[in-house]
Structure formats: structure tokens, C-alpha cells
Image 1 (cartoon, helix red, strand yellow):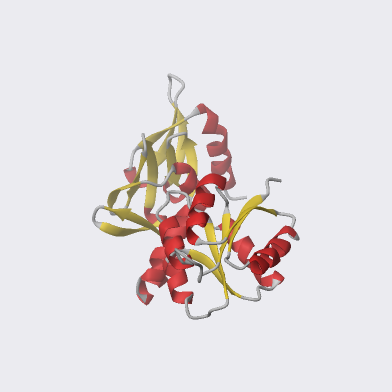
Image 2 (cartoon, rainbow, N blue to C red):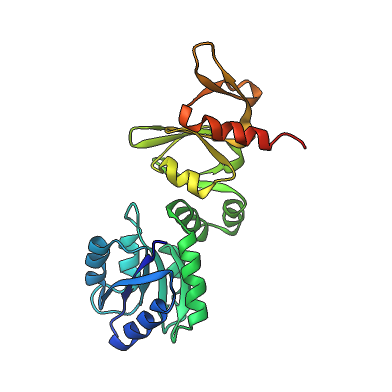
Length: 256
């Protein structure tokens, strides 16, 4: 099992030692480094590529909030867990995409739960969580109820997961075809597939399809496999590599 890497950022050596001791008592994680201020944290993140960052808020130079804000602009930031003695930054913490907010002295059970949560949240879910936290109560409800948040040149667009017909990759972008049209996204197919494994099925290295739109799999006279979509939405090519998975999925949908 590959251990998840943790970076600890706190200006107090004793606090870093305590967090290291707690983290290293958990077999799924390894502490890859430490930092005592915001600038060093940014350098360490770039060099060590940690999966999770345990971050203090009040530090010399860049504080924890500004450090987190800069990290949130990265294409693949670490999951951030704030560990602080102050309880008045919780709202700001979620605005910079933190997945947890722990008060010192950090308890082992609280850290264990936060680390597990951080490990389950990938970039797709982080962005949706961040946008829902920053939005209104109504927006939070709809995002949490099964919508994908996509940032476009028009702003943030919410797409119903159940309304995604298929997603196709073209060079560095993925076009999401859904009931309201098409949306170009910078998510990768792998990220979307990992975030929504029960809603999106891989049928080709460059195509995911919404399972609710799958109708049938057919083989053409020249040996190609095509997936027919419901509601007359056409057909999509299925690669040989993924044909058996598609066929197995179809068999599981049959009654009995």
C-alpha cells in the first residue's frame, strides 16, 4: 500500500513534533517534511508534492490563509487541514478549500478522521466543495445534491451529474456533453471517472459515458464496437480494451 505523504507547517517546533508523532502513529501516512513559515511551505509543497498539508494559520511572513489561497490556484494542490489554536477562521478556511479545521491541541481521533476525509477528496470534489462553501445556501444544497462545478469564461457553471450524456477528451481539455448543451472543462477524464464511478463509465481512452444514457452495445460488420445511446442520441465508439467492461455493465443491468 502506498502511504500518503504529509507536510507539516507550523512555526512552533513543539507543535510540529506533536503532529509528526500523531501522524506517524497511523500506518497509512508518512511525514515527508516540515516548514516553519508560509514561504517555506510553498517551496516544500513544490519540491515534495505532499498529498496532505497540516497547516497552522498564524505564522511569520505569509500566514496560513494566504499560503492556502496560493496553493488553491495550483492544478493539483495538496488537501489542506488547518491545525490552529484559534476558532475564528473556520469560514475563511473553507473559502480556501480546506477539508478540515482542527483546534489545538489536536486529538488523535480528530486527526485520523480528517486525514481519512482528505484522502477521499480529489480535485474535482475539492472544487465543488469550495464553490458550494462560497455560494448561497440554495447553491450549497444543489451542489451537494449531485452537481458538478465547472469554471468557464462565463463564470462557474453547475452541471447535473445525472444529465451528463458523455465526456470526450481532446488534447488538454474535456468537453462535457449534457442535457443543456456542451461545456469545456479542464478536468481530466481520470478525475471525473474517479469522482463519479457510479455515474460515468469508461468506454474509450478518450470517452466516458453517463450510464443512464446507455442503451445497447453492437458490433459492426467490420468489427467495431459501438455503444448506442438512449433517446436517439447516436452512437459512440467503444475500444477493444473497454468492450468487456461495457458488456459486463450491461449484463448487470438485466433483471434476474
